[in-house]
Length: 186
Image 1 (tube, rainbow, N blue to C red):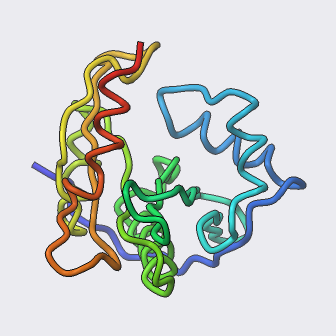
Image 2 (image 1 turned 180 degrees about the vertical axis):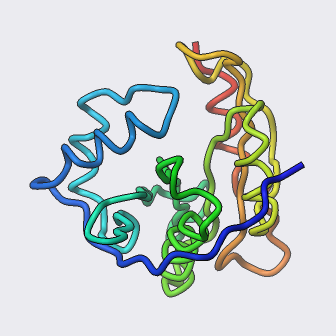
């Protein structure tokens, strides 16, 4: 059974950039069971600020979201938006911070005519995250075995949500290539 929601927090957003990337690293190390390589942190300052933000409460960074635009399969003018990370410090969870971060990213994705789908990977045993994304309209597209290399279980689900796709497009169809590539990894 899920924990009850607590009173929502009024957060402010702030850009993630080269000068505060160390803060993101510390937040991620406190939030996720995986450690991201320097290459990951090198890419973050190149992301559009519409898709990479801190959530601040009382002047402290308590959460962050980072998303990367990628070419959409079979759609020369379309893009897909990959949520690289979204995390909130444990003490601030169930206060609406994750929802606000996700809403920020989704609202900005919806403003772009070229974003067809938003997607991410979620570890198969992360029930809280799976429930969170289901409540926000994300669908399971498939399971990727052995996606994670240093945590158990190593498997994840690929989740997605259609944004600005042509009529009749499905999240599974829009992410078919992403699932195929992931399942063919060595």
